[in-house]
Length: 335
Length: 279
Image (tube, rainbow over all chains, first blue to last red; front, side, top):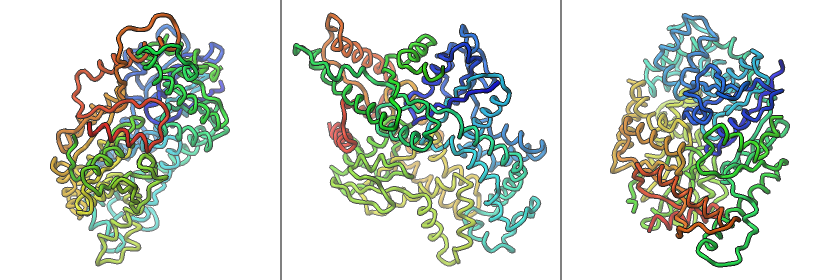
C-alpha cells in the first residue's frame, strides 16, 4: 500500500506532539491504518492517548481502531544503527569503544537520523496508509531534516582520512604520529590514547559506510518528498522557524498551525462598561490583536494557518485531541 | 536581586523565552555596573534582537545600555583555539586535522565554546558576562563536556584545559547557571531534569530556576455573568493562574517574570523584563 508520510515540524515548545496526536486521531477510516511516531521522551503523548507507555513497537490506541502509536528510544538508536549496518563483531567492538559512548550521547544527528531511518523502515513495511511523524524540535541542536547528510559525512571518513592519510588502514596501524607530523597538533591537544580510540572508532565506523551511505540517501529522499505541517506558537522564534520551513520547502508544506492562541474576535470587542473584569479583558484583547497580526504574518508565507486555541489544561485526553483537530480545521489536512 | 557573578549561563528548552531573559539579565547587570558582555552561540539572532540589534557577530557590538552583544562563531572560535595552541608549530595542516577531529567530537567543540565564555569572564574587560546557551536538548552534555573530555583525554593539553574549565564552572563564586522555564508541564519537567543533571555534574550550586511568562492574577474573583468575551477571558485567566500555581507549588524559583500581553518588540520585552528584575 502507498504510505502517506506527514512530518510535523517546528521550534521547541509549540505543541508539535499534541498536533501530531490530533492529526493521527483525525485520519479518516479509509486512510487507516495510521501511525503516530514520536521521540517525545516525556510520556505526555502516551498519557494523552491512554497508553501505559509507548515503546518502539507500534501499539494500538485504545478505543480507536486503526490508529497506532510508537515512540522511538533515541538512546538505543545508535546501537541499533550500527548493528544494522555492519557485521556483529565490528558492531560489538564499536559500541564498547568508550569514544563511541560519548559520541552516541552527544551526536544528536545520530538520534535524529535513527528516527528518520525507522520512518523509512515503517513505510517499506507497508503496514500503514498514513504515518504522522512528530519530529525533534528545530533549533535544538539536532537537525532532523539534514541528519542523513550529516551522518553520511561522518561515516564517509573525511576525519579518518585526515587522521590516517590516504587509503584505509587496518586497526592499530591507523595512527602513527612519528610518520604523520600533521597529527602532532591533535596528539598534543587530545593526547595519544584518545586519538587512538578515535582512530579505531573511525576505522570501525568506516565499515558501516557502504550500508549507511546508500540508506541515508534513501532516507533523505523520503524526508524531501513527505508532506509537512509546520507548527508555531505566537512568539518570535517559533514564527521565524515556520517562515523558514515554508521558504525552504514550499512544495512540501501542506499546512501551518498557530497554536496557543486566543479567539481572534476578542481583538474587536469593546466592553460597554468599565468593571474590573472589563479592564482585565483589555489585556486579552491586546493579546488577541497580537495573535491576529501573527496569523496574518504567517499567511504571508502562502498558507492561512489553522488556529488552535490555548486551553487549560493543555489537551491531554483522546477526546481533547479530537476536539483540537476538528475545531482548528487540522483534520482537513489528513483527509 | 541578582548579584553579578562573573559568568552567567542561561539555559532552558526552546520556546521558553531564554533569549529574552538572557538579554534582560544583561541589562539588569549593566544597570548596576557596566560594561556587560552578552554572548549568543551559533547563528540564532534572538539575543541580539532583544538588545536592539539586527544580528550579532564575532566582534561584540555596543548597544545603548552598557551592554555589548556578540556571538560565538564556532569556526572562528576553533581557529582562535588552534592558533593559541600552535605558537611554536606550523598550524596549517595540523589545523585541518584538528578541525576534522573537532567536527567529529562534539565535546571538543563544546570545550572550545565554554573556553571562550570563561576567557571573556576572566579577562577583566567586563563586569559580567551573560551567555545565551544553545537550546539543545542536550544542555547537560554541553555543561558536562569539560569533565567528560577530561576523563576521555587523559593526556594532552585539552585535558588540562578541560580540568581548568570544570573548575570555573563548578565555582559558585565565578559561575551561575540559570534555567528558564515557562509554567507549563513539559518546560518545568525539563528544567527540573536540568537542575538535577547539573548537580550530578558538579556545576556551580545552587542552580537558579527562573520562571518566565507567568500569568498575573486577574484582580477580581467574581466571574462576570452572561456569555461573551469578557466572561471567557476571565475564566481563561483564572484557570491559567490556578494551573500555573499548581505546577509551581513544589518549586522555589529564584525569580518569576510575568507574561507580557499584546505585541511588543523584542527590545521592549527585554527592557520590561529587566525592570521586573529590579523590583
